[in-house]
Length: 223
Image (cartoon, rainbow, N blue to C red; front, side):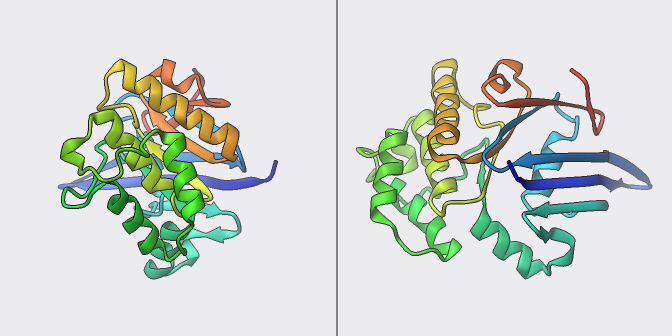
């Protein structure tokens, strides 16, 4: 399989007052096209920082990051934003749904922002796979936590991203809904060939991935 995304010796240092705090200390990894990779680490290990860098939300202090042949550091701010909107999907732990829009509106606004044309057949297939076809007219406050997360997954996938990034996608869910979301991510990878990078503190959740990496103190380490 070809490499879709890669990081080369990436560091990230945050200034805290007069002190510089390293979040990443030289991380290199590759994610193959169609692969499902999970990154496990405790809070503060640097895994969220790495995800934000792969998402083009944060720039590294040093090192290089690529999506396909596009090197993030060679793009303007506008270029990184355009790449993120078109080629990257992000599932956030806190759902981040707009409370004034129903489920359909939350999904469609993401497609409109990405600039891709409407695909009703794909929308319906995605909604059916995620089990939200009957809930599209409901606002977030009328949905359960599991339903909100499934809407968030649809929102992240509606523009057919090359890379799906999942930031602790089960962190705010009970065990039943957590397993349902993990099953969905696994099926999306298997049936849609969706390249996925998921961060989690849960070793059992990570076990669904093709490959599990571990992070501690800003470094990739052996389990």
